[in-house]
Figure (cartoon, rainbow, N blue to C red):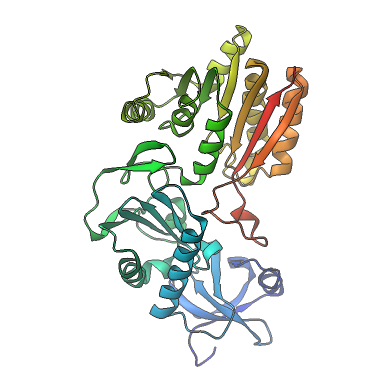
Length: 390
């Protein structure tokens, strides 16, 4: 091992993966290592040739996350520069919201670190042991750059368990309330910072919420509505919106958000989405727009066959519910279901539903959740806008 610090030697497959532009190396592709969980290590091939510096954790299946391809120290200044660069990029986007993602892990060059902004508060997720050990540097940089009122660590993501890290939330700076009100274009909504989905809300759907609002008219059905992100924007233009979710807590949040925006044309139904879509389509109901934003049906590759059947079922039923000229906004956040696979599912659903569906547009996650060309995992959210021709 090198005298310059802990060193990890990769097998040929791991070397090829890094050279192809992917930052992750799996445990089986590590030939030799002397580092401890959370170490920053030098990364070399079998001949000792330098490949970069990375975050190492032998406890995790992803044992190495490459962070730097040059001979540059990963220290306090390195973290500050990466965070400053990520924030500058978000400012360049001119996001019409005070809630957004400020740093998107590998897509911003800091593997395992996510930072989201909700008004005057920041929520941090550390998904790697190396970032966890250096959270003090992260907080220092964020406070100096953004002067937040408080910073919360949301430690409940599955990645932390795989890294051997605890899952209890913790305030890292200042004070953080249970809920805050944020703005998303013309809509305001309350965010549960301590207990809401992800870091509090679905920030990656922000631009799709706005797009769905532009398509909304007449009678709208929003299924898997959660706290009403799509329903609220649709209600600004539609005559009526029905928000459907299986969770009473989610519907209560959506009701609260509708009141917050003075919207009286939204109703709320607690139901199983599959049962409701089947009953409504069999009953001959018709809508001018249907919105589907289900949870990830395929969280692992082995779940894909079942997930494809589920996606087809809900989309087939939704297509049957559309009036001629009606619009379907349908989403998938399953990384394992590629856009090509989703297109295939939608084609099959349209054929079985007997509907001709015109593609209005294909969308992805919001621009503050950037994709990296060589890291397909960063392209996970798909959103299709389809119009029923007949």
